[in-house]
Image (cartoon, one colour):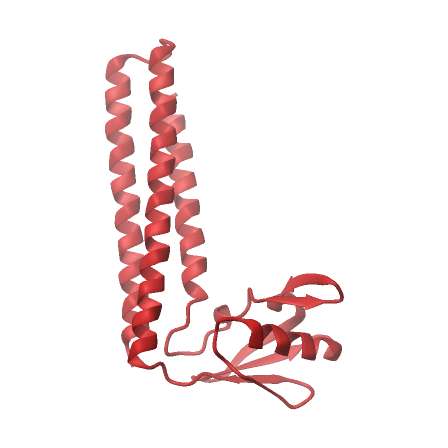
Length: 185
């Protein structure tokens, strides 16, 4: 019973890490990456779609993204979505494709991005701790209902704390990697 609960907790914590990694991919670094804009929401014929559903995104140069819409009528909607986003990029359109030139990041902007990364890291740590809290509550409930012994409860709490520490360490590693990526010129 405890093993099952620990497995479920590990799976939920891994899910939180996956969400964190997806979030961090969308944060701009010095290099162009399709992940920067592929989840950008575009209003198209009354519905909101992610950019990846409307266009192919490629990286022709290290500081440029090329967006080739599947339907040329979506070009203006994609341009509006890019301009409305907090990316700070200006789309250049030739009527068929959109080019996004990524200017080099200033030191101040890099520091702001690092702060944003730290905020997302802390959100992930909180999510992991909340999963731990929920699992501890379940374990204590099992012990109260005499489904597990007190020794099993103590061992389960210890294993859960070990799992939590492991996952928080993963968050720190992911954060250090992203911070290094942002700060390199």
